[in-house]
Length: 209
Image (cartoon, rainbow, N blue to C red):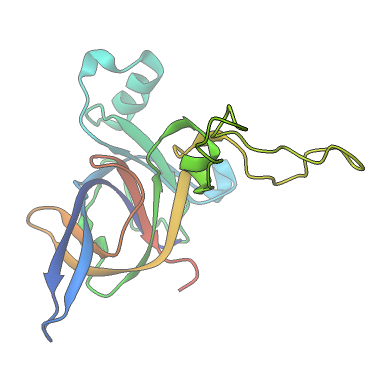
């Protein structure tokens, strides 16, 4: 990839285009990311930068993490993230990556962790119907049939069952940057981005644009 930044999802709103069309957008607060390490092909086999993001109390940072920040001469941050970039020549340790790395009209991929719903059943997770609510022939109303009782007598691979729902990494590709507000460190992205409010979001240039 060519450029990327970490941010925080603030929520959704809407803006108007110059033609008066309503555009739903997700607001991402992308405060400056600080470069704490630079990796190159000679030493590491690939080109990348490691950035730090998010405020954290110093007493909550463990010793290995403290050593990384101390070596870079950077204040401790909450999150470290590695960006594999095609060109790292323009980056130095201690440099800030700001939201103006993107501009209006850019195509981006948004990577975030979806909302976690815990362990859920088939009705909530997959929208299946429940059994009849009569009490004559049914004593269980939200269970499912797992498989045949003759012949193969097995549960087929890929069957939709009760399981953990959400809380996984999701990537939405080819979203459009509607507006970049450098003064308030805000990036307005068209459409929805996974995850709850205040959840961390990675924006990168679209891979398949």
